[in-house]
Length: 107
Image (cartoon, rainbow, N blue to C red; front, top):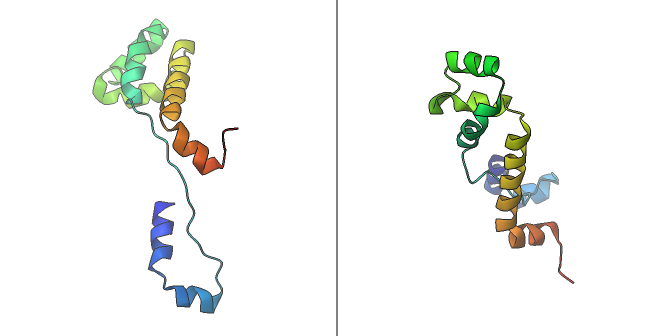
């Protein structure tokens, strides 16, 4: 979205008007976790069945450098709850900006 917006910005207004292309920039918000998910996954790795932990350990997924794989595979309840909590907390940190973006007004 950023790249498309920058590209549209490079097109002179007179060209856009003359060609009547319906191009315009799109306002957007990008949300990203405030904490690395692989770190969070490592905290919950002990909840996986022993066989899975052995397998993941053999391919390096239980080390910090390989925990990205773990974060994709870990669906244990506590990890999912931690992800939801992190997402909620991160979103609430941007509550005013997101409410304005969505056009929500407090009554």
